[in-house]
Length: 228
Image (cartoon, rainbow, N blue to C red):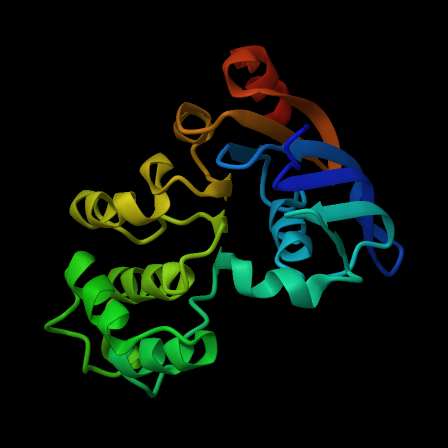
C-alpha cells in the first residue's frame, strides 16, 4: 500500500487580477518530511503558504493535504495545520496567555498545554503582559506557541525564526524543527540554512518553479540563478 503524501500539488496557479502569483507549481511532500521554498521577495513563497493554509484558493491545478482535496475539504484539514506567518495572528490588547487560552478553547486544548508551551519558550513570567507591550522577539515566541498549540500534523513556517535571537531560536527548535516529527513547509531569507534542515526544495522566481529537487541535490548554481 502506497502512503498518502502529506502535501501534493499538481499544476497549481494563483492570480491577483492579471498578475500571476503562482504558475504551474507541482510538488509532493511525504509525511514527516520538510520542504524548503526558496526565492526572492515577491517570488510567491508567502502566496503558496497561504494556499496551503486554506487562506487562498488556487485558480488552477490540484492541491491535496493529508489526502483531502482543497478547497472542497478545507474544513477537514484546517485543524490539522499550524501556520506561523509574518503577522503573529495574536490580539495585541490581550496578553500572551489570554491569546493562547482563547485558541486553546477553539481547538479543545487544555490550559495545561498553554502553560507547558509558555514555559518551554521561556515566556511563563511575561505571559500576562499585553502583546502590544512585548518585544518583537517575545511576540514571535508566543506566536510559535499558538502555531503548535493543537499539535498540528503540518507546520507552515514563513520566516519562522524572524526576530529571534540565538537563545530564543534554540528554545523554539524542539517545537518547530526536524525533531518535532511534523511535515513542514519552510521559507527563509537564508537559503543555505533552509536547505540544511530540508528534505526537498522548491525554487520560485516570479511565481514560477525554477527547480523542484531533493534538498541535497540543490547546487550553488541553482541558488545563484534563483537570486540573480
